[in-house]
Image 1 (cartoon, helix red, strand yellow):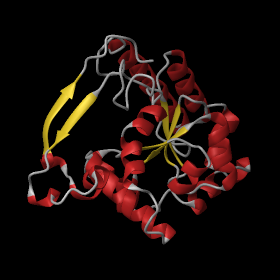
Image 2 (tube, one colour):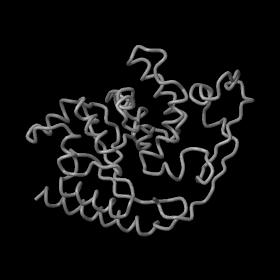
Image 3 (cartoon, helix red, strand yellow):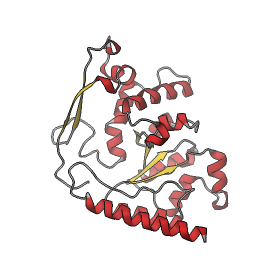
Length: 260
């Protein structure tokens, strides 16, 4: 009975997601998608239906993956004989429209599957660190050709939706984990917050970098405050010095086309 009630609730939620997608289909700045929580909280039927809904509407399919640790994730999938990434692959919901959130505990085969399917990863270091879940193998993902963008998770998990915080945390944790001070150059981290983030969401042809013909959300960061001095390198200043209070102006161009 409990499983039946849960399934009905999930189906109802999918209907709401479909309505959200339809409502904002032509909105210049907002798009909706079905984003099932995770492999250990959603049924395989719901995961498939959500992916089909998102694919049909050309919007990202997003779901948490490999967040809870090898014991929890692999134990829950033990009867299926695969990891969470392998499970999603068996369901057929990994594609270039898939944005897999967290991806902390990955095997080499998991990373290869993500690369082969063209799926991107949303790296939510603030949330992951607060919950003591671990640190995603971002350096290895990037080396193997998997796109990684910076995410925040929900404010209930990470307290803030501030990307400046995520950039600084990403740099610190990756350097510390690899015991390599040169790891994750600031320029690469800014790319994760902009261009690669757009690529993970299937928006790289439209935004994510300042180029002729692309739509842009521009943020002007002042460098007069004490915390911004000195600026030897603009990328390092953004990652290690800047915070939300240094933002002076934002400029946005309005999108008049469909999501993709």
